[in-house]
Length: 192
Image (cartoon, rainbow, N blue to C red; front, side, top):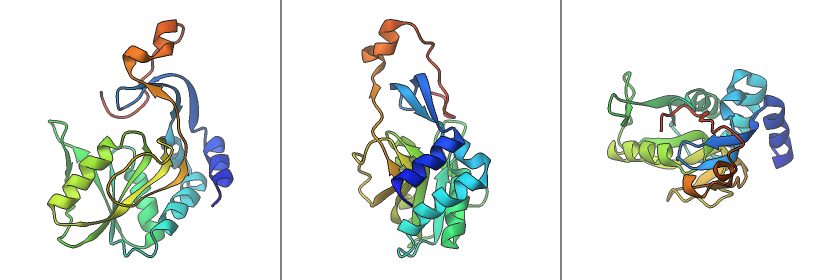
């Protein structure tokens, strides 16, 4: 899939939003990629997830894991394309990421960790730690959208369907806050 084809799907799905947003990282941005919209229709999710899966097709992936909420459906779609199992992680009552519902990584099992959009990679790093603690082998990390423009380093292969650099600021440096014209919105799933 070309970058142009991927952006055409993202545009049709209504993924790109403009305004004043508080990201999961706490940073502010004038753009937000609501990747959850990809998963409202398989005409969007299937080709994007298949394009990501294709990048890991030769890596012997045995299970795909995505952090809840954003990557539950994505893990399923990518695993479907790779013909393997899929799990998801979720937060416990203390906010710590964990595997529940009978999901467990076996020692030596080859795991692909996926996320719909990567900004700081916080959730991905938590899942990587879980997999390593269980003795799993990390095949890599995959995303539909890499918001860092290729700058993030997980210490394992990281591949995305599209990579873009979207400007963001620490709250104290946010020009939108200084202008005071736009309400700050928190559209993501995690409470910050």
